Length: 343
Image 1 (cartoon, helix red, strand yellow):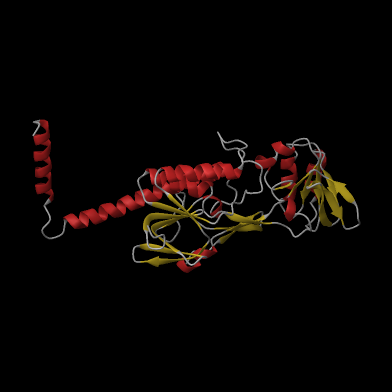
Image 2 (tube, one colour):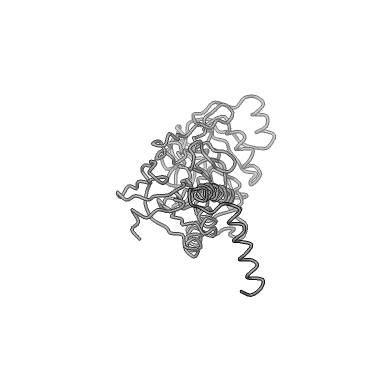
């Protein structure tokens, strides 16, 4: 099969939990499915996937490898590549890849996830996903009872510090360059025993490849073993601009925390034939939730294809020369009668 000319029922863009789960459901529904995977999973730096029943602590690379094998076992195909553009063609969509290749699908399921844009503090990015963390439900247990820092990057920082306090009684909020908490927030922090450190953080320092502490502008090193940081969450959907699909801003407490692709509860976008699942449309979704979203979207895609195929079948049987509905029923009844009598 020529990869550039083959036409699939569904092209799934993105080979993470959402994309592979969707592809698995579609392949089991006997659809021809191609997964185009850019090979840049968001959780690649993490030691393990958490909160995923049956796969607790499993390394992300192992989970995805198992998912690819399962999709292939039902006839689905996996293709490595980064999508640069999507446009309509005669039977659906043409998906353009960075290597010059093309994939064709009657429907699209977009599951490309998001990119974490972290504060530009020297040393911070190097520890992202290891000792610099974003989600207590994903990583809190692993750093329980350790000295945890929270970097103030916006109005949700106090809430973030109060959350992390659930996993450790040694939590420090670094005010950094963001606005100072108000009086009520200071009271909440004090009531929970959360320390507050003034001054800009100028560096995140390591010791043996692990977080050692945060260096302040005055030279002070405040030792921490983990640092919580709220990243800006940006959906990877720029390649859909040619279809008129553009990400929209998501706000929390009046502050933009990122961008996502809008969709209905099934994942259907405003462009007919295009669905989205996972972090590309739900910035806060965890791995197990993204997988479930992929399943829901796949079922909706399959239902849409069934509806289209039924419309075509009805049109064909109404064509001149086709059997009438009554004649077809009579033939069916005759066939059933013959079968009952062993003919």
